[in-house]
View (spheres, rainbow, N blue to C red):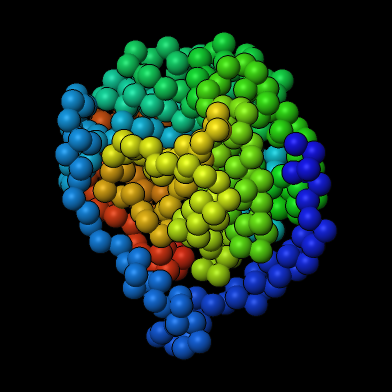
Length: 397
């Protein structure tokens, strides 16, 4: 393991190139907007835009079988939404560059964040209507003081099969035994580099060893698999892809390579995107016996096994090979807004009606109307980058 933590001697040069891309290309999409077209020299980006233009897809028949959910969770394209992601807080103990701008973001004042009772009420409404999986996100969900109580109450909802959490792992190791006892049964830990200095550069904080400790604590506690989320960015960590694969050799770890996605303030551009096809080629050339797993139609990741490895690797291809046709996810933001698409700007408040005294039937009507307005798919890759959206810290990971 130590060899993966030492890093190459030239990573600081790659940082300069990474930052150079940030500064020089920051106005790329604004240029294209002002001139009515993409710059002629960027024909690759133009070609990608055409290649990955998003079209509605046929909904897989398997996705609509044997799902006794209420009409509230069915959109106009027949997709059933049985997976709710709940952001518990916008606050975070890291400052990751792809998540928020360097100057930070304005956070929702505490009194306007959903309370524990409000979260449990909304979750109960969704679960009673057919949601069987809830994922807790943030910000950083583990820093919320009542996280164990929330887990306990949610895990006891009749009909909920999976209570998951996505966390940066910084403060997780000491809390995890209690969270597991409280019903948390699936875990994703975010880690984008195995080099401590690069970790500090990307997150603007220390704590690399604490994240690794959380990963191994989760393994020791019996989480199987422990999912490790890695956002891959050209010039920053694309040289570590195979190092991450090595984490799966002897432990039940599922490394999930995520295509770099655009959100407000993270200065996304296509030149920092490492595509699924490119990542797969890198892994395939290094490792024998890379085999695709048969995925469920609602699965967001493309999953693979490797010969001789206890763990697995996955690729989340939101940019180059979207999975909108099987989407079964909805998002409840920390401020109580319901968001039906990660990349869509449309939101509707559930907090305000709750505080105004709305009963469950009224809330169901609001939710159903929002779900019915969900589009067949998100915009094309380059269009997403120009579509107004909140910073990821507001939306929830």
